[in-house]
Structure formats: C-alpha cells, structure tokens
Amino acid sequence: MADTRRQMSLGAFLMTTGHHVAAWRHPSVPPGAGLDIAHYRHLAQVAERACFDLLFVADSVAAPTGEVASQMARSDHFEPLTLLAALSGATERIGLVATVTTSYNEPYHVARKFASLDHLSAGRAGWNLVTSDAAAEAANFGREAHWGHAERYARAEEFHHVVTGLWDSWADDAFVRDQASGQYYQADRVRLLDHAGEHFRVKGPLNVARAPQGWPVVVQAGASEAGRALAARTAEVVFTAQPHLAAAQAFYADLKGRLAAHGRPSSALKIMPGAYVVLGETQAQARELHEQFQALVEPAVGIALLGRMLGNFDLSGYPTDGPLPELPLTDSGQRSRQHLLTQLAGSENLTLAQLGRRIAGGRGHLSLIGTAAEVADQMQTWFEQNAADGFNILVPHLPGGLEDVARLLVPELQRRGLFRHTYTGPTLRDHLGLARPGNRHFD
Image 1 (cartoon, rainbow, N blue to C red):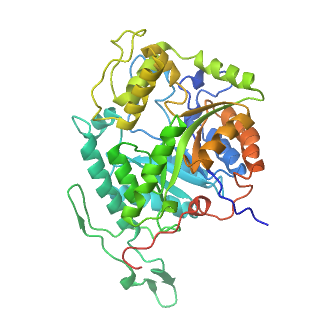
Image 2 (cartoon, rainbow, N blue to C red):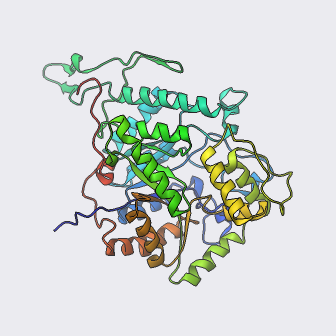
Image 3 (spheres, rainbow, N blue to C red):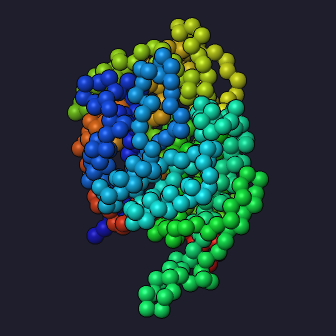
C-alpha cells in the first residue's frame, strides 16, 4: 500500500563548487566546476536517483571583481537556463528551477525561455522570480543606479502578470497540426495579451505553445514585507533563510495565513527553508569536515561576502575585530537578510571577522552539522511543527556534499516515512503536489 502520509520536498541547490565560499580551495573539490557540464550532469543524476523534487540554480548578471573577489570561485559559471536545458536531456524526472531576475530582463524573453524549458523537459521547469539584490548588475544594463526596493517589487508584480499572461496565450488544444486539412492551429484558441502597464507594454501572443505544466512552477525567495506580499499573491514555492525554529514557524504561519485573502488554499504554496547540511558518519567527523572549510576562509573574503549579504555595503574600512557597524536600511539588497544577519551579530556578540566567517557556509540559513540521524531529527522537527514543507539543501562542497546527502540522509528520511522512495508523477507539479493552473483566457 502506498504511503499517504505528508512527505517533505527536497531541492538540491547547485552552486558551482559548493555553498561554502572557500569550498573551491578544498582538495576534494574540482576548482573549475562552474563551467564543467560533466560535473553538473553528475550532480543532477545523483539528485535524481535520490528522488529530489528539484535542482535549483541561482544566478547573478554581474561578475564580482576586485582583489577580494579574485579569491572567490564566483566569477565564472553557466547561465542557468542554458545549463538546465542541457541537464533536461541527462535526466528524466527531477525538476529544473532557475533564477531569472525581473529587474534586468523583459517579460517576453522570460516567458518564452521557461515555456521552452518546460517543453524540453516534459513538464519539469520552474522559475525562481527575483528582483535582483546585487547593485552591480545595474551597470551592465545601462543604468546609473540599481532599482530601489519598492520599485523593484512593483516591477516584479507587473512582470509576473505579463509572463503568466503570455503563458496563457494559447489554449491547451490550440495546435491541431492537421496535415490533411492544412490547419496548423485553431484561430479562435489564441489570445493577444495587449498589456499596457506602468513598466511594460507587451502585445503577445507567445510563440511557444502552452507549457505541459500550464505554467512552469513559480518560485520566490523574498522575505521582506514586499516580498511576502508578492509571494502570497503569486508564488507556488518560497525559498527562505530561517536559522531558528521559532522564527521559521512565525514566517510559515504569516505567509500561509496571507493566502486566503487571495483565494488560495494553504496547499497552493510550499515553503522550503534553506538547510546547510554537513554530514559525517559521526558528529566528530562532521565537525571536522566543517572546520576544514572554515579554516580556508580568508578574513577579507568573509567580510566581503557579509557586506554583499547585508545589502551591498563596503565593510573593508571597519575594524575586523570590532562589532558590525550600524548600517542604514538597504535599498538595493535583501532587507530580510540584512535584518537576519544584524540580529545574529547582536545576539551572539560577534565581531565583523567572526560574523563573516560564521556565514561563509550557510549565509544565514539553518545550519545542520552531524550524522544523518541527527540532521534528520532537526528536519523532522521543523517539518512536523509547521516551520517547513521541505528544504532546499545547501552543501558546503560539490560533488561530495550532495553525494553524502544522497547516501546517508535521504535513506534516513525515507526510513522515517518523511520522503518518497520513488517519483509518482512525471512533472515538477506532481512532485510538489501543486495543481495545474487554469488558463485566464480559456477556462
């Protein structure tokens, strides 16, 4: 008999050499992994054999430069949609989620590319909608300054409306492709979008048939008030940084509680906090591995990463052994992450260097270091106590960290009945238990 109990969702976060900022320096890690398709193909197949719901690839449209950036493996990597298109041919079931910013793209481009990926993968595509928190991206797109926080979110909401409208350009049965009669599509089964808004003017229709999933799954990661409001209206999956159970429960309750006002059931949104996982056969072995990565962190690198995560601040002029300085509310970065890290620095009385080293791996996410049973205990607690519907798994190093999760952690979760043993459907929506959206023009 099939297990009908609620089960968690798992994403595999693929970040070149790993999520730890110094992972590329570890002897077990291929330093050129960011542009190695064989590396990514292996990771995708490891995750798929373990029945992960999805692969997740983050992105930025600016390369970090400068003396400190030259010590990070963050300046060369694949464009995510190109990468996932390639991985769609190397996998059969696992979902493929890519970050694409609404700040430095046009809706027609995004709608077309993700609809194409959904067709290429037979219904496994997902779009991580972000508003860009890297101010350096502006200069690559003809802007003197990055968009402000409020304008980024206003643009993102309209962007989402246009993209989903374009995905609904065609009825599911529009393309008959009848060679005998000569009719390729039914003319009454297509609609022009004719959108004219504050930020975009888009006529349509999209030149890709409606996607197998109707819409690719829409993912978001904002946790500020504007981010939560947008997610409640539009997101189907939310990735979030929540290092403590009580805060995660409050976030979960708040976001789920907003759905009813938009006519959405709580099941329409999956909340998947990031979980930074370092595994060992024993607790001591896991701690030793963690410390190997921590020992490779140059103080300036940790502080530069911290400044970026706090909202694009240059912290190089402050004493490394002093406290985190009081900073204005970021207008160009992630306000939720700024709040989280400022709280962390204060609650643990960390110096600037200590805080930079502290976030070098998890960057403010839940940190789980130990045996598979110990890590599974904490994941089970979060899952069963309404803090998470699943987790986006971040590992310090690749491929070893993901291989450890597949070999040690996934079987432990399966043994507890918390995670699937096999896929039950072909699409990402099937894996996540999300309904196929109706068509605004034809349903």
